[in-house]
Length: 179
Ligand code: HQG
Image 1 (cartoon, rainbow, N blue to C red):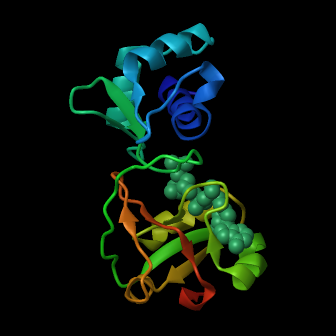
Image 2: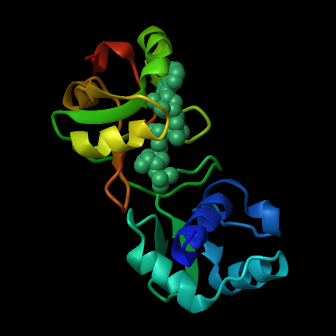
């Protein structure tokens, strides 16, 4: 696996799910100190350098991570299972958004709508192609249409992550259009 991909996967694990794996702590907003991260990663056998980290932030296909303006802190833009407050402001969503899932989940989604599961939010895409790629990770992809503007009118909040993923707490079944 190329270094950048391996580093991106490592950073996703540490900055979204398990910082304790290397003895790191994140602040309430999900930020980690860059020097601590590099030192602890190396202590735990992952060869991380500042230049590798900066390349992952700049070149990552989904722009998964952000460095603070002073370059001293880093966090994941979305996808956390840890309870962190990304301090995103609610944004009015487009009329329609899309959710990529796998066919084997459909029966359960029809019964209970879309749930965040172990993550903090349900992830929605602005375009069908992206949603299809997300669904493909889980099996035979299916793209669901989410009536986002109607949901917002009914009081549901939407957030746009720094890397363009739409987030909401849950999607009740009446707002989902199944293929
Ligand atoms: C499904 C990637 C049964 C849901 C992507 C999904 C995304 C249900 C799976 C980000 C359900 C959760 C997140 C219900 C939802 N019953 N299954 N009621 N409600 N599901 O991985 O959206 O590469 O936690 O459809 O680009 O697939 O990591 O979420 O299939 O933005 O940066 O439960 O991960 O980004 O799977 O993906 P996940 P996701 P990264």
